[in-house]
Image (cartoon, rainbow, N blue to C red; front, side):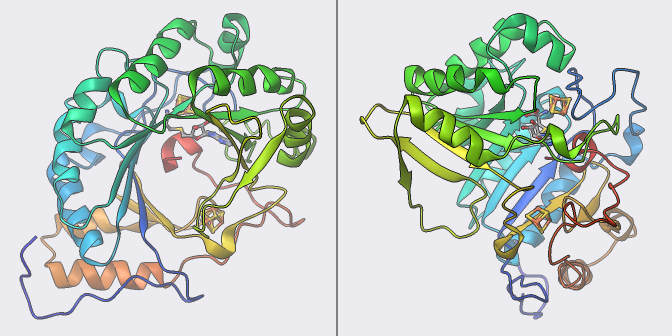
Length: 338
Ligand code: SAM
Ligand code: SF4
Ligand code: SF4
């Protein structure tokens, strides 16, 4: 973006000194799956189309974020691949100067025929959500029978070179913890990075209970007994996953994202832009910051910069899941943009 004024952009730093470099852009609140830990089975009320940011608006805002030092972009949702012509948005985001990383999180239902095109458009990496390796359990978790489509999507992503392909698995006590070894074998067979995520209280059905959370360390011990693991030191403090490789040298990786038992808020570098144009400074924010209203009122670049800097300054120090007074946010993961 051309500098439209002399206002020198500041590097985005919050009031705790954390540098914000990572923007998650939700492009829709809609989804074709109904993962029970995210959306309710009943019909969801979607945001009216007029409330959803257009691609022009997303690009305009992202240009300003990038000027402020954002280097990592992740497109998410809802299900981002439901948004029409997503490849066009990916190409425009990828063409922004200073964007070092452009990734997407998807349920992979529509990926098999589009992975190559997304890679060609400029997508660098992909994270695919998959919580079970058997069709029946997959249906139980997602409310859908599209297991084979998702597997085909993973293969297509590998084939397209969207590497490393990451597979996110939310583990829930008594529901899918018994498949953890199968997932480790899947990582070894496919050479993908499987990352186990602790269940967070961001579900629409308000079914979360602490005893449903399976600590990542417990899973790591289970896998280590069968397939010894060695720690991978990435040197990137803001990385959410603790990473391990197979000690026998087999490709593939195992990661643990433990926001409940081992919070990593102290190194958080993330902010989120929701599909309806709100900035969220934390997954668990109680307030949202309406940048869409400012944008649609014809704000200048300097005004947008001022708004973003002031918003980031209000970023929460941490989540309060483990505090007795914890209150679950009103909006769920599918609306926030996971
Ligand atoms: N629909 C896409 C997908 O599922 O990959 C992208 C959006 S989804 C909200 C992003 C990620 O959030 C997924 O990997 C999903 O597993 C995770 N997620 C959703 N609800 C969660 C919860 N309550 N706790 C932990 N992770 C959750
Ligand atoms: Fe949809 Fe993703 Fe939420 Fe599952 S986790 S319901 S695929 S938005
Ligand atoms: Fe960052 Fe909030 Fe997640 Fe903590 S809970 S890592 S502060 S987004």
